[in-house]
Length: 95
Length: 95
Image 1 (tube, rainbow over the protein chains, first blue to last red):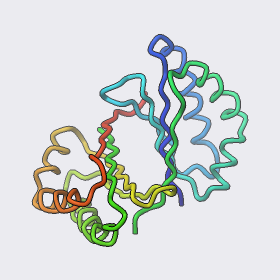
Image 2 (image 1 turned 90 degrees about the horizontal axis):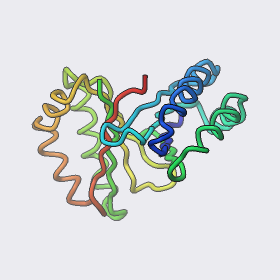
Image 3 (image 1 turned 45 degrees about the horizontal axis):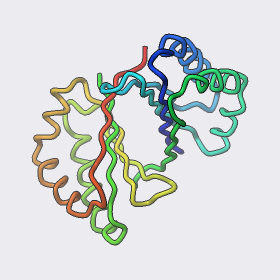
Image 4 (image 1 turned 180 degrees about the vertical axis):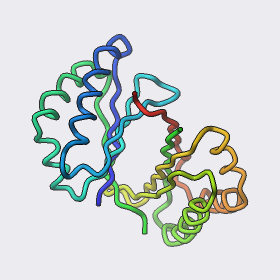
């Protein structure tokens, strides 16, 4: 099992453009057979800071997610409106 | 509902000292009646970077967690070994 935090930073003037793209990305990713968890959150102190919390069985499943039609179509459209690069943290559970 | 990411950065030479403190903190927090989720993860690229992912019904519940005996005893002991300040992100679900 791997847990992922993926953070997006969006230019404020494009928030209403990216929201339906995020909604579609979340809905379609939740339908992937290997998806254990895929939820999107907004920082209470910064409405331009979007945070995905994800769980996948392994790295291969995460790689397959990144190759899906919805990911390859929607993520570049979202990233056109980013104010800075995305940040990713891949984690293992503390035992 | 609020989601929290709390990130700790520990000096490498103290990892074996903090691990049992973290284990106790996680076990006791999971027993709190308002705790919905409280899991600790380790960054795959940095074994000194510890990440809590938490879920609480509201801010009051989070405040009560921070006043528990186990939190007030264990967190200062952990923080004695931090390499830099903790970072917190409090989030709402994207609708």
